[in-house]
Length: 155
Image 1 (tube, rainbow, N blue to C red):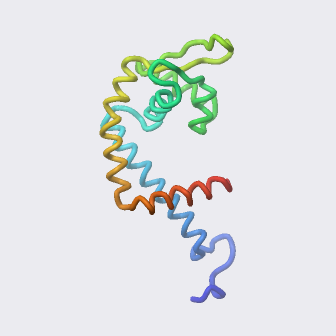
Image 2: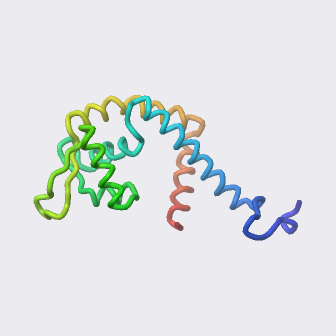
Image 3: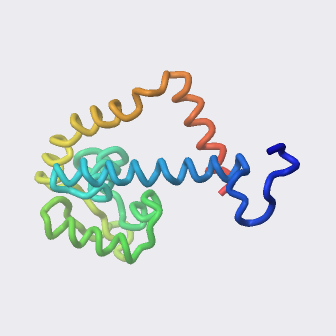
């Protein structure tokens, strides 16, 4: 079928742009499934791991992030971050205190248990990431990152 014969319209599954988008989506679904399985073995969710990692990355072991900062970084709304932090606080992974600079904000910090959990997962997580991505060369990885960044900029 030539490009002139391609089906046009909203259900045109044979156009390269749609195939590319479906490939990105399907790959994301598979990665999400693999992440759930990985983190379940470590008795934590992928989102909880992301919260622990973000706090450590952005604020260090003793610092914290406000719930507003976490919701922005995780791309979730504030009510979802509140319930997530509630569960993590109940599980002993984080503490929440009032921000001394703005009493309306809550600062979320890692507890010793949260630090220990993050450190325990860090090595296996890094190995899992490497195992998944080893199919790409360094050049392909750079190209993939540039392409995905270009797509995100248009969203």
